[in-house]
Length: 298
Length: 155
Image (cartoon, rainbow over all chains, first blue to last red; front, side):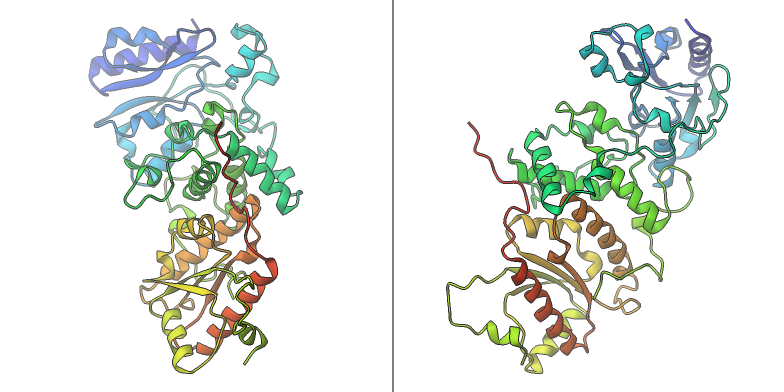
């Protein structure tokens, strides 16, 4: 048991004994190898279940959003952007969160590790670290209420910006790009795991679940899958916090973040805005400037 | 009368005619189109107009759904900046469509098929020019086949 876990458990126990929070949302050991599971700790004596290591991949903040009253959440540096967005979009108040920060040095890609026959945490090598982690600068954009373990120094991230397919996609012709997305949506089974895990998809009723009027047909055909991906990308434009959860949970292992990463880059280019940086201000599509470019409008 | 406008009077029924869906703001462009009509201006009749309260009302979903359901092109037209009946609807629309265009470009849809314009209630002539030009562009591009992935029959 590491110092981080010791401090985490001790503090969680204290919080629940004092009744500062109603629950502590953290990670516990899963039933399979190298797998952590979200844990909802309601009683002080359960605090010893909490763990923290590279298998703690989930973004737990989404579990906190419907929680009434104050709730403690274990947040990694990347998860903090979701907290910031919730506060910015008036979904939850800062005082309703009790944020527990920790030093995280990167999370694993479990599926790839299992596929490679590696079932121990000691076997983690650089290729099994999530692609978002080298782009992390270890800087909490919102100060946590408590920091478990020794404070991690802010660093210069190994890669400035995380990029992927979309860089190559824009070098293709229009038809090749169409082909790429046709193939993607033929494989998609529209299980909506991406939506369920997306921290920014917190609507009580999603537009694709509505049937009066029905905007996206529930059928399994690829064109409706494409509608879903396009609508989802539009709804996340300027809001996506680049947490990578959608790609992690996709059972078909689709490169779903192509849309989102591209729009993140375009929002930065047009509106000079990056989501999840400040609780002040508004998302770029919820505001305007009189002098916005309109060269595409005749 | 422009050449394109004359062409639409062709009696050849086999000639392909595009389906153009236009979302017009009630306060400016719809009135502008009305003015074009009362002024006896002609423009291609390939356009299907849907009246909306404001260009800010136009959800990107409307355009996507029109394209999915077989429109060859879509046009959104509203008040000039500063003229919005609801003060700022067109400013929001402007930002939204800027991002939508980027997304459709990545997705591989020819951006000529998704057009935007500001046409005021006094600009009947501009409206007929816009429609003539947009229709010509869509005709040159041809039918929008397979903008969305083909439906594959299940085994």
